[in-house]
Image (cartoon, rainbow, N blue to C red; front, side, top):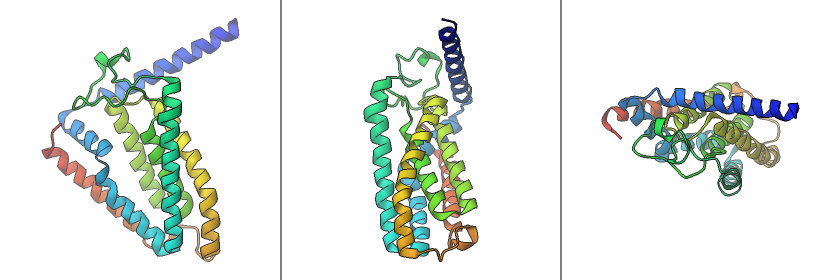
Amino acid sequence: MMTLELITGIWDFLSECDTRLLLAVNGLHSDYWDSFMRLYSTQKLLWIPLYIALCYVIYRNFGWRVLMWTIILECTALLITDGVASQLIKPYVGRLRPAHLDSGIASIVHVVDNHRGGPFSFPSSHSGNIWGLVFLMALLLRHRWLTFSLSLWALLMCYSRMYLGLHYPSDLLAGFLLGVACAWLAWLVLRRVKERECGESIAQDAKGIAGGIVPIYTLAATLVLILCLSFFVRV
């Protein structure tokens, strides 16, 4: 009985911390940052230049075959991550989004542009998808500064999901674990393809990857664009 009470107490404490952290982030809002976070989180077309830049680096260093396999495996990993999260785990767990009208805290959650998302939040598909991409690029390219930049991009994406009231921190953590797991499975296949196509001739560090700075500049330029657009696009 004491063990059950202890587990229940720990669970309640963690759940309260989860909610408090969400509300702390969600409460730091303004008109400008509402626009920025909405654009950053939901306008997927803005990130196409970054994806093209990553494809360029892969092609330049490993050739067309590795690039094609990377795209196929990454898309497969995204489909698995999104499918498992949205079709299996979310309906089974049934955790309502913070902004959902029946969540119990909807009245104190700041909602941007009346966007409340789908009914369920655990785990976060956004988190799973973006961290899956970051992890796969880190394993394939082994470029420290690129990995660091992409990680910051993913962290800000996760922050934006809390800011918009769409996910609890634990949703994002679960999405991260799911995305990394799927990316690792994709890497097991991609590593064999890369070794067959390229052998071990390409150094696995930042100096051995040509053009690794291109996605970093592209990411920075996109971020500046969103910062500027946020002055004019009001949600």
